[in-house]
Image 1 (cartoon, rainbow, N blue to C red):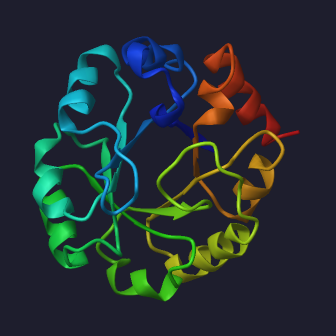
Image 2: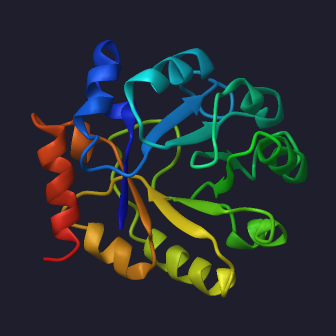
Length: 214
């Protein structure tokens, strides 16, 4: 299991410090980019994400919860190890979003809301590197994990088959449920309040990893 701490739950006044705090434990840094249209919330955009490049060597896991991924994806500075994930429900057609992100040279991810049928992403599985399963409704941190996400993860694993696609899961994951999420098939765990809601983010991240093997 690889951990991708979500900076949505971090102290926005200390983002560089918060990013460095998990350096020795995390494999990615997760950024929830929201536009106030696709979801009813606003967070950080390309200027903030790009500015953090010089403070962390970790690959960036950029989750675009926005209507126009084709327009905004090129504004992020990315490299081969990064991933930009868009939503299948966005206004831009998925094939255009995939092409726009692929052109940047990073990995391409696709995500979907908890109530969107998994079948909606089947046409694009041969074109993406990463699928992000939402275990809460996107838009706000600190929500409770939806148990039905476990079946979706298992079903997704079957749909992926032999394809080389990473399954990431985001939403309400903590030390009490992380093991079941990983056992269902998750390879990357996105966690916000379970890490940045604690006094020592690095220690909390280690506890989350340890809980997978308890």
